[in-house]
Length: 332
Image 1 (cartoon, one colour):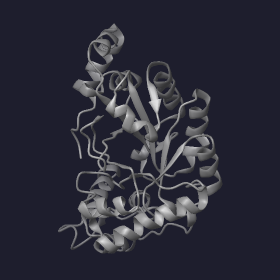
Image 2 (cartoon, helix red, strand yellow; image 1 turned 60 degrees about the vertical axis):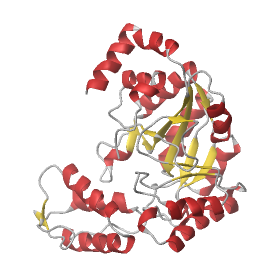
Image 3 (cartoon, helix red, strand yellow; image 1 turned 180 degrees about the vertical axis):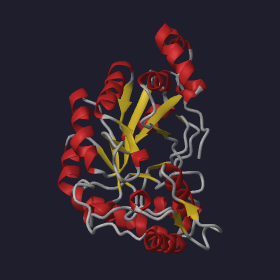
């Protein structure tokens, strides 16, 4: 809240522009989006909608006018010799609205972006675990959900489902992969509902991804099935990373040089993950817990800042103008 008030003050008075001109730029602001559009009535994970189309258009328009928007291939040179206000725009997962809604805005402004794709959802469209957890939570008629041994007491459903969804997602992410799968199966049974098979309209297809790549968008990797990599054995991590790379190469003709960690928190990747990425020929990998990329940023831990639907245009402008102030690593 304090940052929002400060952002509005800086934007409304012109102080932000003055401070931005005074403070030297020492790195690159990497922004991360998931979905574009209106998710307010969605049965799925509504917190993945980063901006409405109008808000996204305003944000990208501002970046075009006031920043240098670069691609990952420019990152090494940009970090070595920082200049102006440098920004990199990224998207995770591969949702269809990335192509249908975000891509036209990017094209209209002539701004490049990077799309990190979970290839298994493109090859075999299905509802991902985070969206299924949200769907089950919103659809159930149960008053309480027993989920022992993962929760000692039955979970209260209540009228507002967002707190329940957040609690379930946090627990799922914290578990070893097999245990997480068992919890999701138990949740399906406890809620008494089942999502219909298939996922029409949920994901892009390869023709959409190739279209974006052919006009200069970067296609990066995000695993095959979007697991929390640190919860897997080294062998299974390698399968997820190498399998993703193989599909991107086969469908686009381009190597997977850039990668984003699913979930992306400090604990979501480990030394085995980095070793797999090194072996796969990945140049840089991106995390997702805040921060501002500098020359000191580890090659396989390039920080990104989440853009969420509560980020207004004043806060967005402040982040772009003063990332060293407004984009510190403050969250997991």
